[in-house]
Length: 447
Image 1 (tube, one colour):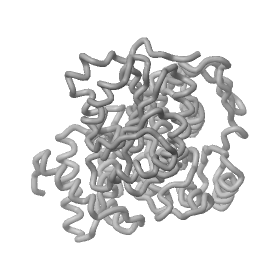
Image 2: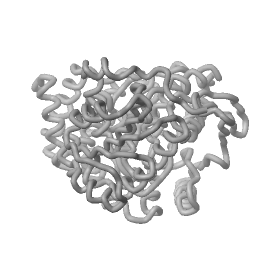
Image 3: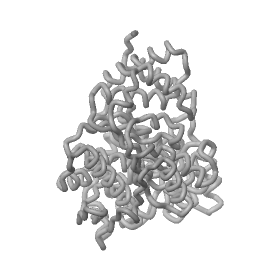
Image 4: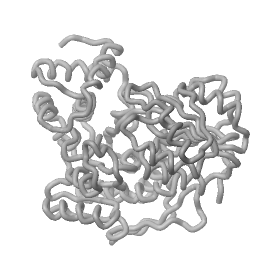
């Protein structure tokens, strides 16, 4: 097996991206079989849905880790470094580990002479790494859809389905029932699924698939519930209750009222796993796990005066929730939105929803092949008479807003994980930023 340098390993990985998205399990199954089917070594909590998958995965990981489990975490995409996708006890892959895993799997792929996509390769890396490191449980986020997603080969009978909305319609279908079918098809035979009940059409599809697979469907709002503590926005406090547990004033670390449902789903799945394995997760582990969960780029405030908010909202439902939460949580005079997105996203609807939130848009183009030209966004915003300008470079846009925004304004960077990742990397590395913006303490919080 030829050795690779870290740079060669990453270059090889990223060379797979042009092969695009190929839903199907034949090729990834062949690769995993040749590797000894590492995905079957460890039970998993498998998370599908449209919005909230990553945050829910982070809640699961934190609760389980605080309860003493060795937890594998596989999410996508990454903000800045590939190793963020594959973590054990929140420690990302090192350069050396990336290099070794890429070399092993590259050797298998070349021997089998089969094409493989970037996501399939990354999924194989995660399964192999978790098996080699002998994790106790893995938390696996679906890449797209679910039924034909490479992650669906994971072992484990616990599934979480977060909120569902229209996305990736060219792959998953135009109707909400079709999209729900693709996502809910990850439910395992005889397993248990914890799901957001959603609208009637969504609920019916999840229930039907569960019945067909003799799976136990547990719906938020029906089989388990949460209530927010009145008048408390930050920190968010909830009371969680199911048929035999009631936990009061659980502190949720992640910003945004919508995180309460993600936390309830995660908590339900973790407690179920513990019961199935004859273990008990203590109340203290639950409280500490929820309070200490971190998830970069999701309603993340990285400075104040002005408040700078990063959120990877990349579809209309997520944008709507982000704006609603920001309006509820923060006090500000004006909002500057730095927006950049990929060509396949529903930017027309996303920008429309943002017009009632933003006072001024700065439209950017992330450094990605799939990025949409921001001049198209400008044409959309003109229909709504929105104040906007195009500054394609994200660093230049940040420098411009730094000169414009006052201390009581808010800067919201959103539209894509690539927009947020590029902005976050620039802000964290820019010494000028550190001297001109205040760190995220003493925020202008409402409530």
